[in-house]
Every structure is written in structure tokens, then in C-alpha cells.
Image 1 (cartoon, rainbow, N blue to C red):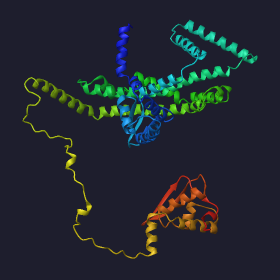
Image 2: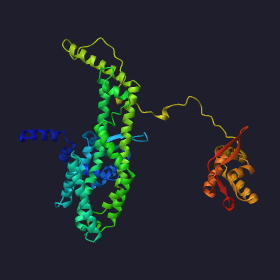
Image 3: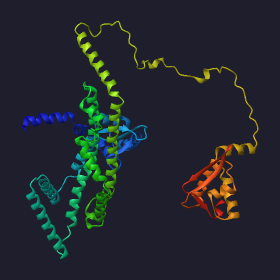
Image 4: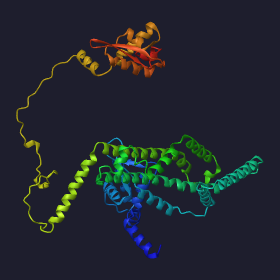
Length: 487
């Protein structure tokens, strides 16, 4: 690439890159610190309301430290969304929104972390990893049977030689400082993976929009995307990005690989090298696989949602309505271009259009409502309450709540008279006066004071004019009357 070509490419990058735009801002330390502290650690996503509260609390302290920050957390988050450092999604529960770092946001934080903690020395481990990876790639791409067998036999000889030396006691553990440097190299690569999740999610969103756009803009009755969807082809998972992520997801969720990873982390935590790594390194690795699994499952669910949504978009024929809308818009644009030659922008048209949006009015037209100036339409009358006795109140409470006092008395009476009893046996001797509510109350008491039997039984109660019977899969047995007797 020539210097001119590179200069032009870098100029475009300077204008388009959210990372370089962040570096030019006066508030860069504040922005990067807030994003890293609240979205770059264990919490990769936060509800919008919670993120606003955290940033507002930080703003007060930062202003006391001399930072000139005159906006609210909501306004700053809106700027970060527009600049491409944040992305937002609907909350899983369907209420509000969730913020998380965009791929550019992850890259910006990692870039600043590398500047703050530069690599001080050239480590042997990085060169070893590069050489091993190149050797493995050369072996995997070799289509010669002879050379592949020769490489495998040479590797077996090296392994046999190492086994023989180890049995003879001829081995030396890695120096703790060298091992710590190797571990930090691994940590740097591990911290880059969360940004990969954000990139995969973003690429899936772009692919989903492109497939929908192809469905809408393809005028043929059976386009490629439309035909594939009708044939059951999953264009999301079958894309290069989808296949790459599926392989990664299978590795992350593999129980055997996860067990090996956990064993390796536990073994390293007991080694002397932990004294030469920053605090929290082993804790980060201990939770690393679990966080990867959670984020991988989240991306997998997103891909599944996109696939189902695309299939429903086709099967429900919604794309046909969008095609018609697109044709009408293009026809209107074409008519506008033709009319531009004979009409001016401010010419009046003999056409009345009913707008579907709300009409805008001045705030000055609003008037305050003063309750004291409003007269009641009729005189307020006083109603005197009727007297209610305690028996009536007790009956009303029994209709809305479970009478646990009665149930405890029934259990205690049954245990004193007949010894240990199950729930069905208590109901047999003391019928359920509240119907199903009494049965539920006995099961609540069983979970608190009974012993599970692990067996099923039939229970009976009266519901109005009907006798109801039900079989429960697991019942409880009451043994001691003391918990049910009044002190």
C-alpha cells in the first residue's frame, strides 16, 4: 500500500472510527472510566435506569475532583449511543432497555488498558504460541498423507522422550516469574473475547436486516432467501458468522473441555506464580468460563430469535405488505422527480391530507387547574358506617386467607389422638373447612414442620356441593405435636 492510499484510508478512519472520536474528546477519561467500570467488568449489560443511577453518583464525586461535567447521566448515555460506544436492547423481562458496550466500546477500553499497562518485555511465551500455532496450521492444511504421518510420528517420539525423562526425574518446573508472564499473555487474549461476542451479535443484527431487505427488495416470486426459508434453511446459522459462532458455542458448552479448564485454573491457583500476577487474576479466570457460557447462551438465543422472526416474517406473508409499501414509496419518489420540472417547492396543491400524527400546540395554551375554583356538582353527603361484629370480620378473613390457626389445631389434635399422620390422614379426621385452601395450608405446614415421605397419596375435600379428590406426587408426615401447640 502506497503512502497516499494509506493516508486516505486513515483519514476516512479518523472520521468514522468511534474510538478515535473518543480519543479527541476532552471528557475521554470520564467516558472511558465509566464504560470500563460499569460495563467492562463482570456486568456486561445493565438496565438503563441502573446505569443512570451509577453514573449520576460518579458525576457528583468527579465534579468535586475538578472535572467539568455539566450534563446528566441520561444525556451522556444518549451521546455514547449516537457515537457508537454503546448499544441498547429491550430488557429480557420486556420492561425498559438494557445497555451494553458495542464492539467499538470494547476496543476503546482495551486500547486504553494496553496504553496504561504496556508490555514491558518480550516474552518467550508469545513467540512460542505463534510458532506452535503456525506449525499446527501448516499441519492441518497439509494434504500429503506421508508428511502428515511423519509429523505425527515425530511428535510421538518427542512425547515418548519427555515421558522417559519425567519418569527418570529429569524435569524442571517453570520459573514462577516466567510462568506469571505466560499467564498474563493468556489473560490479555482472554480479555479480548467479550468484544468478540459484541461483534458477533452486531454481525447477526446486520445479517438479519440484510436478509429482510433482500426479501422486500427482491421482485421475483421465489428469490433465493425466500426459497431457502420455505425449504427450512436457516440462513442465520448457515452464514459464515453463524457457523463460526456455533463451533465456538459448542466448545464453550462442552462439559469435558469445561472440566479441563476448571482443573487447570485450580491447579494454577495453588502454584507459586500467583505471587507475581496482579490481584484478582485468578478470580477472573475462575469465573471466566461461566461468564463465557452466559454470554454465549445470550448470543445463541439472539440468533434463534432472529431465525424464528425471519421464518415468521416469511410464513405470515408480512414481507408482501412491505414489498407493496416499498413499491408505493418508489412510485411516489418517481412522481416527485417528474413533477419537480413543473412545480416549485412552495406551490400550493389542491389536496387535503389527514395526518396520522398528533397535532402540535403551543405550551402557552395550557392553563393551570385550581381545584378550589371547581364547585362540586352536588352536596357531599355523610354516610354513617354500620356496626360489624367480630364473628362477621372473622368470616370475611377466612374467605380471603388460609386459617393456619385452625390447621395447627387439627394437626395437633390428630397427633395426640392417633400418633404420626400424613396430610391425607389429617384431612380424613379433620375435614377441610376452607376447601382447597385448607389442603394448601397443610402442605405449607408440612414443608415447615413435616418430614417428606417421597410417596404419593390421595387427598379429599369438599368444594361447594362437590366432593373433590386429587393425587399428589409427594406428601409430608407430621410426627411431633409440639410445633403446632400454642406456647
